[in-house]
Length: 148
Image (cartoon, rainbow, N blue to C red; front, side, top):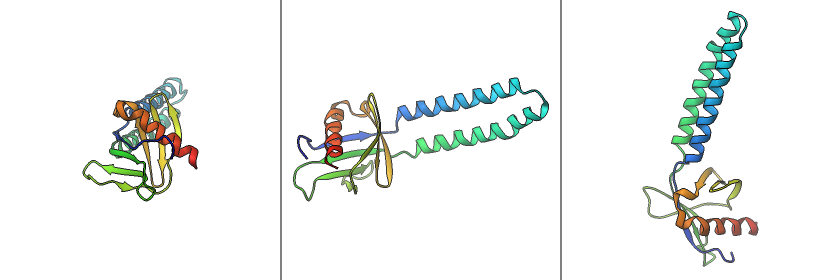
């Protein structure tokens, strides 16, 4: 892997994902309230309250649990010797990294936020988590993408 230095980038719960889920929840609630306001008869209003509101609340609980269970730790790219080179995941409680099989697949890239899929899990990576390591990390990620 050319020009990709070894780097460790901290991974926290994504504030971008949290804001996105809150915006989606608010939009969903506003749609239910609009349905209630414009519903003509009592049957449509009961449908809005009896089905839509519990479904919305269930989605909110699910979205919060997804955000709460998102991985927290450190993602490491080790450059150098071929037998040790690769991606490693460090959970907060562990000092040694767990080797990750396969190359990461970058599925979304926004300013300061990247969604990366490794076999078995997804990571929301943000520049705000580690500003000093962000650009070396992005370089390693791009070099890995170009290799496959």
